[in-house]
Length: 332
Image (cartoon, rainbow, N blue to C red; front, side, top):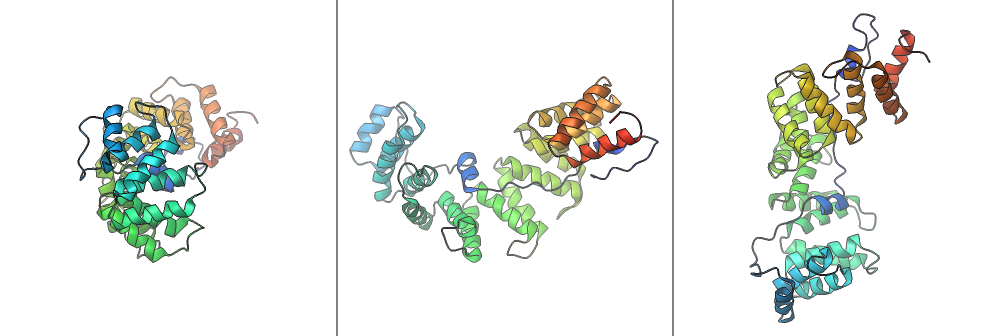
């Protein structure tokens, strides 16, 4: 909870209470490109990733080798990075109908507009790959219909392509569908459907989906409230470095909800989240220093954390400082 109740007894006890709202990723096309990549499974791999052998096979017209050679050039693996050459070899494979090469070429053009002014061509390659069932391209087509100003917005088309991608196992699309059902964006609001799609993404290791499932269990949204399961999913996400999950996991350790109560563990997770810039965690960490929970009591350190969080715009930190001044604990 974010409301600071002004009571002289046990002053500021509420500062360590957490707001476990559902913090969602914008799920942008760029974040998907960086986070979740489609794994080629259905196409025979070249036996060796040695650059020379791949190059030889590519020059013989082997589409899979051409695709791999493009990847080597794009990522600078075994050769100097060269995105122009990457595009050349991706195109060779794409023109032979290799969906993963079409997807790779589309992404290369879309995220490297300085390579060539080819936005329309990028979309065309995404569409070719999506029609062949390439799940990452299907996600992008859905994204463009929803978000891109250069394409006519069509929410039904967006939902259709997200669903195709999600059913083909693409975690980013599964996450996006979870969000769509959670908020009722163009569909009937449905926590259970949201949970199902988040679960599919979480099972693939998506840390934001894992966090959101934790939130749903903590708040009883579409599921029976269960702090132990909330802690389990927060922990999975927190271990991957997701700051909001670290913050909420710390809160459970602080209160002992769903886990064995431990100020030490609460302090550890609040510290990890704070180090990543989470202002709620920073405010909570200030509370631990204020009370001496899990750490030696240190009012100066607590005030430093509160003031830094307040300066960054955290309202709860601002409220705490105001109360401390009103109570005469600190000066203006």
